[in-house]
Length: 200
Image: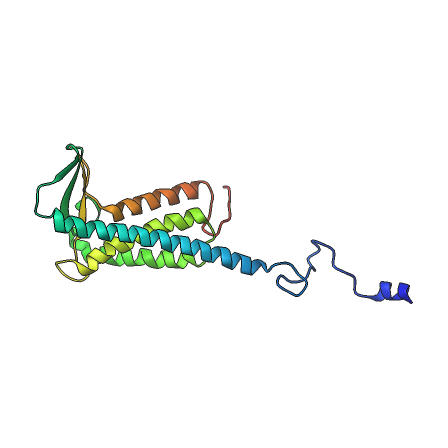
């Protein structure tokens, strides 16, 4: 009888046969979706932390230089090679597009929306850092365009870092450039935001 039961009973699934107990089921191993969700939440937390720090540094530096340096002589940091000199920039980098301030505001808002969409499937820490830099920088300059004069959505961005023979910029610009460079590097290395690696 025992032999008959052994033959007619439901066979136990073999490891790797595709019939293992479902993840998270009783007697099964840890739920992989739950592990992925936990890892994704940590990456999103890292993204938001980097963005928050960038935003605070950018906002604080702008408030300080507007109060202390605007309408004053530039401060030399490294002689004439690097100075702090406040300007109001209504355009993009290098002062391009000063008549398109509202359009640039929309672009910044669109960048933030795209980052929020990508973050839903974010499992890569390097990508989290890169997107955090972009998000913090975009929010920093978007704040200027919304709240600074001459009016809402037409505000001029505060720039104050003035290297010799180069455009004047701010910390938000620096974060955006660094985030963009990091994204290019990650893309060349084949690392996707979801943590997968591919090779062309």
